[in-house]
Length: 288
Image (spheres, rainbow, N blue to C red):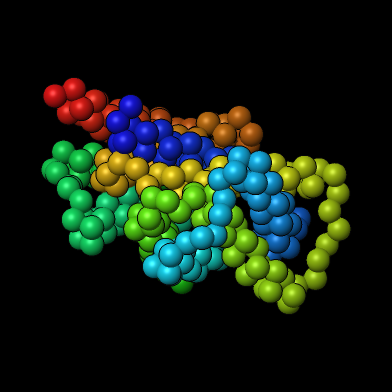
């Protein structure tokens, strides 16, 4: 497979992992204070990442100064993304915050073209824009939902863009497991400090299983999001971020009983079609 094809598969895996994590967190239904939940999930995922990395022998910290600076920037951006996204999500309609976050393929692809001079042809840009339109059909945001929390969601977009572009500049010899572990640890440390201002609540078996499951899937989200920025061209891979919406549709129906409308299904079809078209173009170009 070409680097772009691998990048597309990694992006889809990342979106699936993050969406399943979000589903498990949503099932806690606010029973646990946010920062307490992030601390518990972060401690579990950090320990699992470290054990897995040690077992695979794919973690070390002999990293150059420039890469450490990029990891620091990426980690701060990860904390900002987690805080602003979740705060926005808890205070505004899901459709609106989802719609705002879907500008990420555009911001990351355009950022890569501006700062890294990566190619951004009209076909790929068209695929990104068509996928964005399909997303709007799915979420159909209303103007009444835009407020101060919309600004929080936009800041989250900026943070994720910085995170992904910083990952892009990391040297090839920096282990992805190292970057993944540092990201999880940084978010956990931030949540730990913030949780000192809130009262913790006891965790029963059901909540423990939900948070434990979320800890496993957030590892996949972190790891694949690091890997995806290190292979292929961002403008090619970007449309596959929309597959997270398809996962959300499926899980929303299976877990919460939300049956999508015809417009939602049409939007999902457009999202899938743009990804398949981009994948077809890549295979055609690779065969030349």
